[in-house]
Amino acid sequence: MIFDIRRNQGFSLLEVLIALFLMSVALLGTAGMQVYALKVTQGGQFRAQAVVLGADLMERLEANNAGAVAGSYVATLPTSTTAPDCTTSSCAPSQMAIYDLDQSQQNLARQLPAATATITMTGAGPFVYTLTVSWQERSFKSRSSTTSSQSATESFSYTVSRTVYNRAAVI
Image 1 (tube, rainbow, N blue to C red):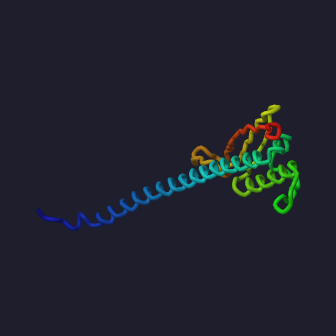
Image 2 (cartoon, helix red, strand yellow; image 1 turned 90 degrees about the vertical axis):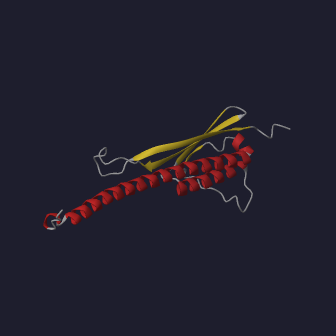
C-alpha cells in the first residue's frame, strides 16, 4: 500500500477546524446555561429574602401586641410617614408600629427589587394580619420569543398570615 501524501494535504487542518467549531458551540451552550443558572439562583435568593422579611415584620407585629390590636400595622409600603427613633427612647405602641414599618420598608428597598408590601387586618379579636410582599424580577426569555430589546419583568409575591390575640384581655 502506497501512501499518497499529496491526497492527504490539509486533512489535519480540516479536522482541527471542525473540532474547534464543535468545542466553541459546546462552550457557548455551557455559558448560556451558566447565565440561566445564575438568574434562577438569584430568583431563589429573592424568594428566601421575602420569607425572612415577612417573618421579621410578623415578629415585630407580635412583639408590639398593643399596637397590633389597635390596628397600627395596617399599611401599604412604601409609605412616606416619618418614623420616630424608638431605639434611644421609649415609644407608644402606635409610634413603635410606625418605626417597625419604616424599618421593614428600608429592608424591603435594600433587599428586593421594586418591592412593595401590603398589610391588612381582619377580625374583631383574635385579629388576623395578612402580609403580602411583592417584587419585580427580570424574566428569562429566549431570543426567539422576544421581539424587542427591552428586558421584560415578572411579578412575584409572598403572602403570610399571623393571628394576633389581645394579650391584655387575657389575665
